[in-house]
Length: 398
Ligand SMILES: NC(=O)c1ccc[n+]([C@@H]2O[C@H](COP(=O)([O-])OP(=O)(O)OC[C@H]3O[C@@H](n4cnc5c(N)ncnc54)[C@H](O)[C@@H]3O)[C@@H](O)[C@H]2O)c1
Image 1 (cartoon, rainbow, N blue to C red):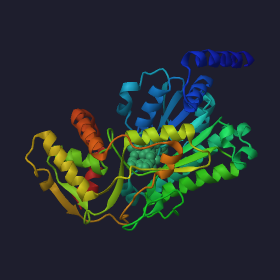
Image 2: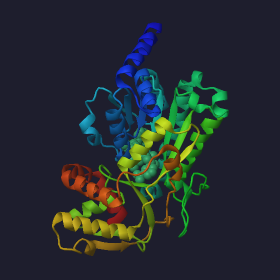
Image 3: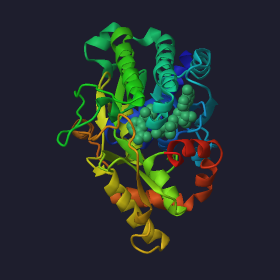
Image 4: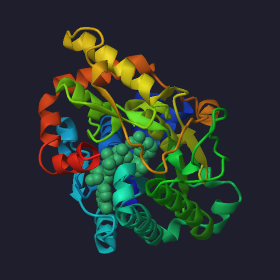
């Protein structure tokens, strides 16, 4: 052990001389990668998780990345085909409800940090089967917290938790990825800040809110180094086509109806998934332990305006007459408990950590459409089988 440590320290010195890190962030990342981080990313086969896994695997070759995923209907390893043979990437099929499996994974791979994205994530499904959301999002998260707490227990100190010096102790981090939906619904004015009270309205957002509370409680009670981020609606490549943007891209390609809920005036704040992954990377490395960060693009769209923009861009890309896709819009009965407006104030993340989105909505949407048009096989694979049954249940029989 002493020899391994001495070698590591000698390596740090040598690499430090050769790499000459410019900023303090570069120095921190260099040190962490050399000293060996074994990061467990849960839900890495899903939409956002796959982008986070790719970013961490390619940007930090010194980290070992363990992608833990149960491969539910939303998990798709095809999302990670391009990096599946990277030497620092490892896939582990496991369910976060299986506490024994989690313990084995921590022990076998000496997990040093967790980025937790695994969840049931679709509001409509939560209305049909709320208990599935309680199991995965609440009990699964608590299982993971317990495993981390037990495995890291000798490194967790009361002083570090309460005197504000989390940053001095960089051994471990439990990073929980959450949603702006925990804050409930806004009126015409105002934005969600990190201090907005929780007021969830759907079984999905209630389950995410509960999991956020447990994560914070483990920080306070057991001194687990935690951080939480709450992000607005994501869009981009690899998004499962039950969510609005990929569903409508698929339907426009196939000239199928575009089912818009209620009056279409529900407002969401949209963020390109790559920008969410960039924010997660930044918060993982520089976020203050015990803190919460809101992530959003200051990019509000009513559903109907978004769908019209999508139709315009798709008509151009598919060489269709202007207005052809818009004629597919049909209004369907509203979702129960539908939140009217979400909008994130991401000022803290910008001011404290210097993050801002890298693309405009128009650019991100165009890149997303291009990805779906170039990856029709991915889309067809995902839209076959069980998904069709679900689709009929949710939309065709409405
Ligand atoms: N999609 C968004 O717009 C958005 C916005 C803010 C926050 N989030 C949060 O980000 C996270 C990821 O969201 P997403 O849209 O990528 O979700 P997703 O549904 O695309 O992916 C979820 C992944 O978790 C896996 N999973 C589900 N249950 C599991 C279990 N019991 N054990 C292990 N793995 C399991 C699935 O197989 C899938 O790969 C979620 O926690 C979600 O609440 C999503």
